Image (cartoon, rainbow, N blue to C red):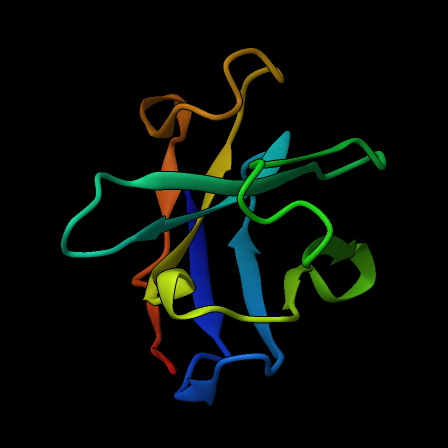
Length: 124
């Protein structure tokens, strides 16, 4: 089993920055960790993903150039640095972990473990 705990959410003004953290614990091997977001008018949207052991990353087009995903293996933590935030970035942000490969990394159904989510309201 893997436990994921997100933190760092909160109200931010448009144009501002925020860093989310996802702390992982447990004995199960993790292949990759991803951030998804869920807004009332959307389905669960892929944001960014990173491999746990390497440095491969992928981003959704909507956040490319503004968000950066990174990991600190010593702390078992993955970060999502968000800059130039827009009102349309408003959502609950979830981190998720998967045991398998990089295949279909953007699909939320491919992930085995989920955190509880952290809210990010962006005011205009």
